[in-house]
Structure formats: C-alpha cells, structure tokens
Image (cartoon, rainbow, N blue to C red):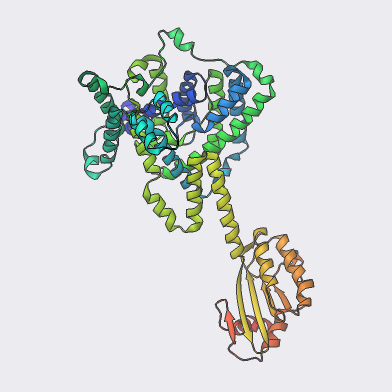
Length: 556
C-alpha cells in the first residue's frame, strides 16, 4: 500500500525523470566525445550525478552530470597528463576540494551574484542550446559540416547552397513536428487532455516517423549518424570492463593536484550558479542549501573518479528540462540516473533507434523558454542598471563561455553599483541669502569607502565663503577613509576658502571635531530675509528648517 502511494505521489517525477534521461543520454556521450575521453566515462558521470548526487543533494529539482563547461579543461588535462586513468586522480582531488569547501561553508558566494547576471546567464544558455541543437535538428552530419567548412568563405550564397545540400528532410520534419507538439502542449486546451508528457510523445513520434521512412521512403531514412549512439556490451563482463579504474600514481604528480583544484573551482562556481538559477525557476520557490550542494557534488566527483567517470556539475540544461517536464522532487533526478544505468547495461540497441532530431526539438524548446521575449521585456522595465548587465552576460555566454560571461556581467554590475553608490551617500540642500550661502549635507545611514570619491568631489565644489553643515545624526556607520576626507577638508581646505564648516552628529568614537557649531552658523544668518534668493535640494528655506529643528536645543 505504501509503495502504491509512493508511486501516486511521484507520478510526475517518474515522467520527468524519463524525459531528462532521454535528454541526458546523448549529452553524456557527446561531452565525453568532445573531451576525448571514453564514451562510457560520460555515462558513468551521468549515472553518479543522478543517483549519488541526487541522493545527497538538498536541491529538489537540480540534475547533475558531465557539463559542457568542463570540456576544455578535461580535454587539455588528459592531453597533458598523457592518460585518462591518471586524469581520474584529478577528478577525485577536485571532488575532495569541493567536499572541503562545503564544510567550510563557502557556498554563500552565490548570494552575491545579481539577478540580472543570473537571468542573462539563463538566457545565454537558452540561446546557446538553440544554436548548438540546430545541426541535429536539420540533420547535419560530421562529414557534412566538414564539407561546408571547405566552401568559399567569402561567398555566402555558395555556403548556404552547399549547406542546403546536406539537410536531411526527415530530420527537419521530425524536429518541426516535435517543436509544434511542445508548443501546442502549452495551450489551455491541450493541457486539459494530455495523458503523456509532450517530450515523450516527441521521442516516440520521431522513432515512428523514421521507421515509416525506412519502408516507405528509404532515401529519407535517418541512418546511424543521426541516431543516438550508445556503446553495446555483449556480456556482463564486457559491460563491467568498460569501467576504468584510476592509476593512483597520479596522486604523486603536481599537475594532477593543480588540475583537480581547477576542476573544483570551475565545477563549484557552475554548480552554485545553476542552483541559484534553479531556485528561480522552481514553481514552488524552494531554497537549496548551497553548502550541502557542494558536499554532494564533492562526494559525486570522488565516486565518479574512482569508477572512471568524468567530472560533473549541476547542469542547467537537464535541470530546466526537468522543471519543464513537471518534476516536483529529487525522485526524478535519482530515477533518471537509474534509467541511465539500467539502459546502458540492458537495452542500448533500443535507445539507439531515437533520432537526434527528436531530442534537438525538446532542447530547442527548452532553450526558448530560457530566453523568451518576455524575459527581455521584464529586464528592460528594470532600467539600464538591470538591462545592460543582462544583455552583456547573455552575449558573452553565447560568444565565449559560461564563466567568462558571468564574469563580464559581474564586472558591469559592479560598475553600476559603484556608480549608484557615488550618487546616494548624502542629501544635499543649498540656499543663497543676502549675507551668504548655506549648504547642508545630510549623510546616509551607511557611508562606505565606495562613497569617498563622491563626497570628496562635492566638498571640492563648495563655493568660497559658504556656511557648510555636515550632518551625521542619522548615520550608523562611516568608513574611516570618508571620515579622513571630511576632517581634512574641515582642518585645511575650508579655512583657506573662507568656508565656515560645522560637523553635527558624529559619534565620539570617530574623533571628528568642529571649531564652528551649528548654532554659530544659524545665529550669523538669523537676521537675513525670510525667503532665500535661490535654493536647491528640495527645501525652500533651509535656515527656517534648521532654526525650527534647533529651537529647543539652542533656545532661539
């Protein structure tokens, strides 16, 4: 009875796990191939990422596995170390460092990443997914791509014509129908009648259409180049022989430790960014404990290294597909890992019937949901300080890579933060009377070193002969550098420019003293006209305001 209840409660999770499994399968193989690692190593990382990391993780929806962002690091490291089994020692080291970072509570760094950068990262990943899936959606093969690259670079029409010769009509039909189904499944009418998830229907439809082409139109049939390609083991011993054990002498090599540290840093940053994005995409808006996530990733990478797998991170492609498929808990993540294990060992021939165009359709639709026009509209309404970092991050992620894109977005966000801080450290009021000018600077609640340049510039622009009041009554914290600027101006610059300066409300611990009191300045201007000749800063008569505020204190 309890088992039946469990299946009823997690029905959506099992369906989502199936969809993520179908997407993760070719990605695991593709990343392994791009890294020049054994294809089975990609599957091992996917299995461990699903079952092990899924079990230890505190995230309800995040899916881990081999990540494209680590491909360049893995490729270079395998080449430098000379053997894949030595590289596995670096994966173990990377996992151990991540585990240590989790215990040191280093996961909080993700909280300092602005939402505009995270949204830009998601949109950039979405656009990257679309771009990278277009070849499979159109049916390009490796040979076709090489032929197109040999075309005349300067003749665009020739390039396009050459490209069109390598288009597979069957792949286009399958991908377009798949995208159409995914779009229709989002409408209210289809949501009422759907019994199976759209992603599963897209896969089954792709297999069915290609099977029909095999008998009705053999010229259109998609061959093995355009289908999922999974290693096939003929026996149990051959299956277990695909696991690669690490060569432990690698731990004596400094390069292994250096590579492991790089893997730990990059994988941790990508994981934290993905977890932050996952929490934003989660319909239930649940919170992921980031330090627990680092520990889970560390355990996963240690086990993956011992079993001959690639390093892994939390992957936004699979995670977003998991969310879009209706997952509600980590059961979907664990289930997808179990399916990878079962199918890699038992039915690889069946899985090899799935057209890549069907999976490309699912991924293109997933990418579109990450960079849909409504997101651009939302960020535009947030103003330039939100829109510019968003667009910069998006463009950099697409044109460079994930980490560089986020880094560029952070730099631009920091620029706007510094600029904003320069504008808001005080409230400025200036009145001109018949016998002199009165300026009051009311400092903000917190004045940091970021405000130093703005306050220094404002003080330097105070006209000669001005009566200046700097009010810190509402200020809880003032940075030492700012205090130094104010005291320096008071002691040396103000007397030279005949500026009568009063410092009000500064804490005794700051040791900032003023020879002229606020009372002295008010008395000197009390007999002037009631209405100032000129005012700025939002108050028509600053003198009257100060007199009222100080009336009881000075018995004016």
